[in-house]
Amino acid sequence: PAPRTVRFTMWGGLDEALGVRVQPNAPSSTPPTRDEAATASGTQPAPKRAPFSLFDFFGGLDAALGVSVNPKQPSPSAGAAAQVLHVTPAPTQTLRSVFQPGRTVDNTEPPLVVLVHGLESHSGTWDALMSRFAASKEPSPSFLAVDLRGHGLTPVGEELDFGPATLARDVMACVTAHNASAEKFILVGHSMGARVATRLVADFPNKVSHLVIEDMDARQFDGTKYFGEQWRVNGFDYVKARGFCQSGESIHEVASALVGAAGPGTFQKDRVDGY
Image (cartoon, rainbow, N blue to C red; front, side, top):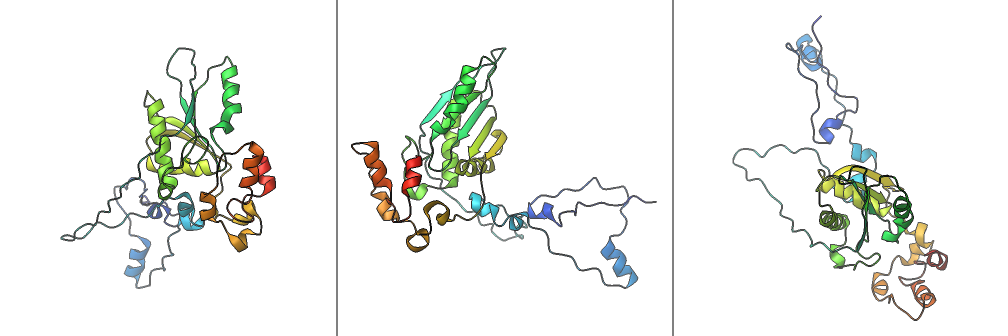
């Protein structure tokens, strides 16, 4: 029998949704398609179902990560001017970071592991992990733990620049300064840091060898989970939050000022005590 042409239709058009085309090598002779056969026999071809959208399936995962993934668009027709959108990226912020060199048995350059913390955290969240490797006599990768903008000892920078793409570029600039070998690095992100890490991989796909995502969701932010039911009434008072003073006579004074620093029901006492 003549060889059949097999297309990857298991996902109902996933290849088109992702803007790629995946199909096996074409056989030497191609039999008529089902629609062509139906037309030849005088019957109506079966209706085609709508293509499956992976990103609709996940409920807007691309928007949650701050990235945009669209199908390939047709080339502009002859004589039509292609529209090119020029975007000026925000300047990168120098990140406070902690670098721990690794070691190998043959004195070659050890792999680099970049650690990105989550919301309400800083580079110190990785201290226990890095100390464990430092105390061991076994070969170890190098570690680079960063303080993202507005976390730890890194200034928040321009408020309007604060977003996934800018945070990812900050991390990439910090990595470049420490990664003398320019080899691909291993990227680990926790919670919000995992979203930043995912965006970095999307924007710099040739820089990362492995991506580790730890405890990240991809849902619309629900303030009541963090700030209680009062969030539904007052929300987050950004004007009041900007006036919060991060210094005081004691840590207890600062902690007391932080409770409700962005309005009632935002930074609750039990949560602040956990800091």
